[in-house]
Amino acid sequence: MSVNKKATPMKEQEATERRKNFLEVPLGYTKEEAIIEANRCLQCPTHPCIEGCPVHINIPVFIKAIREENFQLAVDIIHESNLLPAVTGRVCPQEEQCQVVCVVGKIGDPVSIGRLERFVADWDIENRKKGNTLLPKKEAPKGKKVAIIGAGPAGLSCAADLARFGYDVTIFEAFHVAGGVLVYGIPEFRLPKSIVEEEISMLTKMGVKFEFDFLIGRTRTINGFFEDGFSAVFIGSGAGLPQFMHIPGENLGGIYSANEFLTRVNLMKAYKFPEYDTPIKRAKRVAVIGGGNVAMDAARTALRLGAEHVYLIYRRGRDEMPARAEEIVHAEEEGIEFVLLSNPLRYIGDENGFVKQVECIKMQLGEPDSSGRRRPIPIEGSEFTIDIDEAIVAIGTIPNPIIAKTTPGLKTGKHGEILVNENMQTSIRGVFAGGDIVTGAATVITAMGAGRAAAKSIDRFLKGEI
Image (cartoon, rainbow, N blue to C red):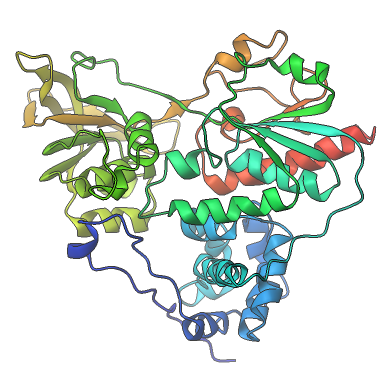
């Protein structure tokens, strides 16, 4: 059987245009393009792609359905494992998971599983707009209530499976909208808010209830849920507490965490300016510290808000950046100025207390550290400054300690992460946890996989099996 070694390309907005707007960058496959790409799948008997998927989608079967132009079947197969495919098809790092083990990848480009997932999901959304909504099958009601803390990827995924199992599920969310990092963290040009809203609406139609502006530990404690008649609790509140470098000048005006910056832009609808008036400050010279996906998101967002120069400062080289290769390329194409092998030493302020410069030092790479990457070492006497009027720190997040502090007996690790056993049970009976609150900041799809695993354990717990 002859297989095309090259993946079917996906059309994108031109860099010169997209850097001025918040419209989605990749434009998606047409039906014809999706079928051509689906025909590259060998339908191999070992299907390692399923094992490579954190939520274990039956990838060969849904691709076969695309090949046969049975798109509804493809949707149904995906929905057995994932109710948010329009989300994961856009932001999941498939190149590191299902696609990296694709057999076709041994002779050429792996099958573009993520792009095919997005195509199917977008087809389904268009079909729903015509009134054709098919909900996943649900088991008979079990008469038990489960509380989910956090409406992010882990909580949504856990809630979806528990609803299928027949439980009465309520999600408690601190923000005024559902989605967690999907709505406040990821920019509109990578994941449109309308897509997230439409995908989450499936859970509402399945009977999942949402309580917003509900801060766990303040509005109600974990123990209070059991007093309210809930039989089990899942904590999926993520890792939203930003980390800083603790260097001089970090308290100057104009310095933000990436978490705060992206939340302001997303929830204050800065991506709709000037159609929607927003209080977001528009800087001209911006420094973004970090080399991950969040750093790329912050840098590309600052550019779209009108910055003339956006410097992405990272202490290692380009090849060591943890961001997705696609995001790095997009940032370069759009004009983000990479300042690599460099590390901030201090921020310098003006007479009004606002940042005006960042002083950095050049780095060289030494022996590998515990992460397996070469350790960056400062080069003595190589200090230099960059003129800026805004800095965005994107060096990671850790769990917010409020839940641990208000839940006696809940065991946590040294960074505030909740400790769980192999069944995702915490130290408190009936309380489970998963996603970033357990692992630290990770990917959307990894959190969703944790939510699914927790749902299975909660079901077993409520049946008295564990």
